[in-house]
Image (tube, rainbow, N blue to C red; front, top):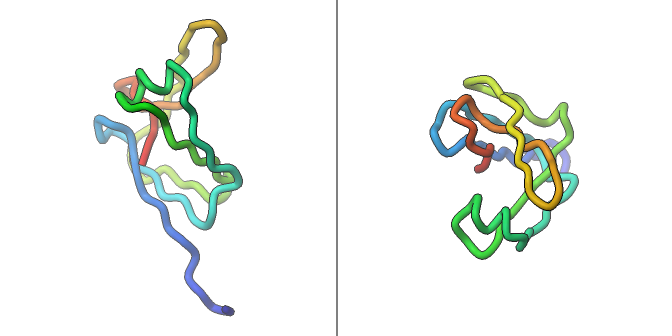
Length: 87
């Protein structure tokens, strides 16, 4: 369908300090059941979506890099309060 509006996904961190808007469909969408994601979300799993850089804009706040260390180490983008960015 030509001229159709793209999908718009809006969300932010848990404390509300950061808000974002993503356009279109994610490049990757997955569900993770690892222990860290269970603890981070307080659920049995986390739903993750990855968008192209050009499709995401931060509308409020500033991203910080938060580090988590467990069996492996990775960096988790989050807000000033250190919470993960989520919708």
